Image (cartoon, rainbow, N blue to C red; front, side):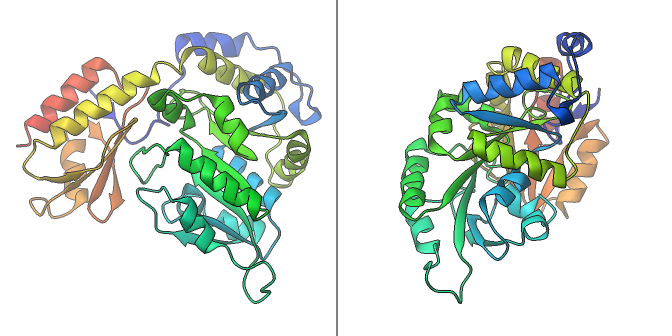
Length: 341
């Protein structure tokens, strides 16, 4: 039995999702004439209480478009040192937008409003980059699926408003945070200028992310998406998967969270596990001791037993539960871990 816990991006479409995809009405989305893409964009915009949304091939492209939208070359954005836009988007912040990042040392990828205030460069001091954007990530990937305190997000919004800064949310796993915290999309729509949400992680779609914002911002984002090469034609077959997932796969994320917590509880009992990050959603990050020469040795040992996971560097390993991780696989994985004692 192969158990793939590398990421929640490894899922395959369910039978119901495939059926919805095959029944989709499509057109040419480059001309904004794909009715299913339009329906998905309207659905997500309505969920977040925003004026408009735009469908993207990937979350990275959606984030990079937002950064380009909110900044000019030479500007600086503020983000946590764990941020996906800084660590895992190929240096796109500098390549695509000519922007630098001021990295903050937060707690598991989460910073405070006071840290943001201290990081803002004086706008009239032309020797330093002009700070124009604050970007945060919820849940935090490198932070182990941690969820932000919404009150702190609102405090940061006030800082942005006071200092004429734009505010972007990388919400790749925002669906997980909403389920874990009992929050609603419209709360976030009211807080941020733009939000990117991923459909191909916890929701199980084969492809796609959506960027949400004002009509004016999404009109400009459409032009930027074109520049980045993100125009798609009969994309409705993919958008139909997103509509299906939003209707059927959001509430079930709690199952992934529960399994992740059970894995974490077992890991804490194993003598070679030094630390397990607090678990709120579907990501488990843990550290092993010198019993294993390296994280690679541990990964290889599990791989020999059909379990796939990845290392995060510095002795940290990551497990991600997801739609295709069944109860049978879960029970088997727990047994394999116990046998490592």
